[in-house]
Image (cartoon, rainbow, N blue to C red; front, side, top):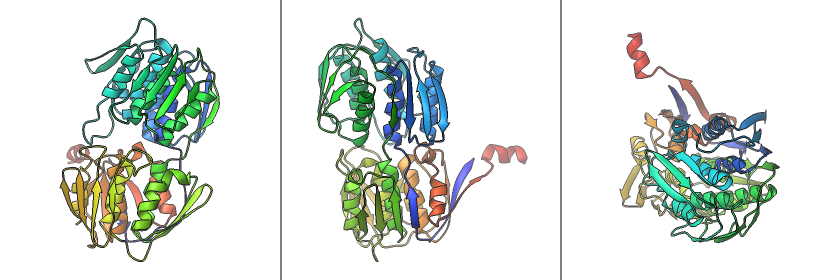
Length: 429
């Protein structure tokens, strides 16, 4: 079993390079299934969700070759529908993009129900609504989602009941090679939706409107290979921005798109931090004190739900009472108990988090409850003087490329260690 050990109390100083976006890379990797040919994908982050996705594609016949640590050639010429490994698929949430890819290319699909972080109900009803609008007959039995169609995917008008990133991407992927025109209304506007549309267009698709709430897709008969670079990870960048402020440091964060970070930047400025923007970087400097603020998570361009736990860790050290309103997921608060172990004064009231700041955090044994919650306790540990051990770090490594090494380069006293688990200890005794 691996743990992350943090000896907190050191401010972060220096520069950090942000990796490619996991949330953008995943749908693009699965969208390669639509392409009969080779796609070269650049700026791929080295995280476990990506490695798992490559294994899933290899299992259905894709040929994947690593060119450099961050560049891969993906050839899906010979893939087959309905062959994905059930146990691999259930490990990650993003595996559901294989449904849209198989349906778009083969007119049918069969994929196990997805996994991912557990922080409340995350239904795929809007995905199913979209696939049915495209002419699919969808069933969910025996742990699988299966789509059948007599004519394959057929263009249609789709109105989502809520702005779903996953459903927008899945339907856009399926519609790229559908027969006819598809219009998605109330589409998600997140940067990784735009990135996937740009990738598909580079492969020969005809998609317009990505980044707005109406996306129009004119289906084409086939797509060709291309070379494409994934956008930087705005959540990784935001996490380092928050860590810089929480530790009373100053960090230049390189390889970012500052516009994608505007909602995080605005809230950090409210806490008293200084944020200077460059063409592809931001410089974040903590203020002398951290002021209270209120946050409400919203679809892009609002404050991202994936930054809520990290912001909570920061606000534990702020002066006064802060509030976080989680409007996306109804139960994204499992990490709160871990912060309480460190002395945080937090109360959960429905979807509202009430944080009484001002008291210093103390080291304690904690665990990562999910991907972003794991980074929240890491940020808290960086501020707490003394040694904190974080377990279940595989959840952090699902979405952060070499986060320990990057923190070390900024002056953090942090390391990853291997310790015997309970079963190993029992055998040894």
